[in-house]
Amino acid sequence: MSLAFHGARFCWMNGEVVETEKALVSAMEPIYLGIFEGIKAYTAKDILKKGSLNIFQWKPHVDRLWRSAAVNGLNIPYSKDQLLEGTKAALRANGFDTNTYIQPRVWPRADAEDKVHVVIPTWKFDTLLGKGNPKFASVRRFMVSSWRRVSSDALPPQAKSWANYQNSSLAIKEAKRCGYDGAIFLDSRGLVSEGTGACLMTVRNGKVITPPVSASILESVTRNTFIEFIPEDLKIPVEVRDITRVELYASDEAFLCGTGGEVTPITSVDDIKMGEEYPGHVTKKLADYYSELLAGNVKKRAGWMYPV
Ligand code: PMP
Image (tube, rainbow, N blue to C red):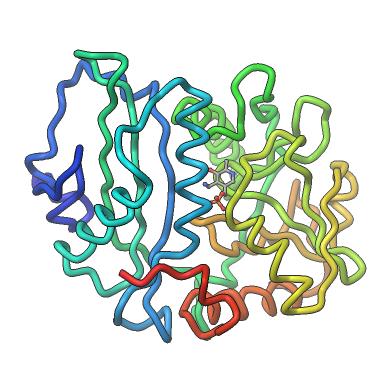
């Protein structure tokens, strides 16, 4: 088996671009104590075509990486700019000209626990977005998980650590076992939290509603981005507040938002359909706008793009 990860010949590791095949560490490394980020670079102009790349919202992602490191007592021995330059160098070395996922990873070294390994793999992904993309409207049946979201007094969901994804994995496996496509978590209070790898937004009476950070969610870059542009650019009100399970059932529309999930419409939760129309018109409107924004076509949001 080739170790060229998802077709990526190169990654950035501990200060330099290296061949993925040579980015090797010992099996004894405590990678499970690590933290990471998930960032995307999109093709400029039309996100379904090839072209030059822009990294989207680099700064809030790298700031969160630093916060996750601080919470977990890890010290990253590079500057944020060095990581940006390293990421760009890896993308250029791979010659990528299609949408690319970037996953900086940091974990304590087995041979010196006060030091860390920093690796930045990158790989191509298929977007759900873009005009005429048939994947966007796929049917997605969700359930409310019997597993609660990890709570911030036990394992802080605001830090993006690998450990938190054991919680997600339990919920995903349960959902698949029960014949669903995905799961929504409640928090320890029994109020709606988020998805297993993305935040939740609902639409009710023309308003977009999303749970607060205190509902045990990851403080999502995409969610913050949406909270900013939906009211400002699309003139649709956004409310950040707790949502009960039954209110979720009563939504006109529901979708997940995140770097990986982009805008993922949800057809039903616990077999209760979200509204009359699927995907809903607010979900469609904001997904179309978001894909224009990601392609660098929204001038006022150019500051969110980091050309490679
Ligand atoms: N919640 C969880 C549990 C996630 O894994 C992610 C993906 N990072 C998100 C929310 C969305 O966060 P972001 O928009 O920063 O990707």
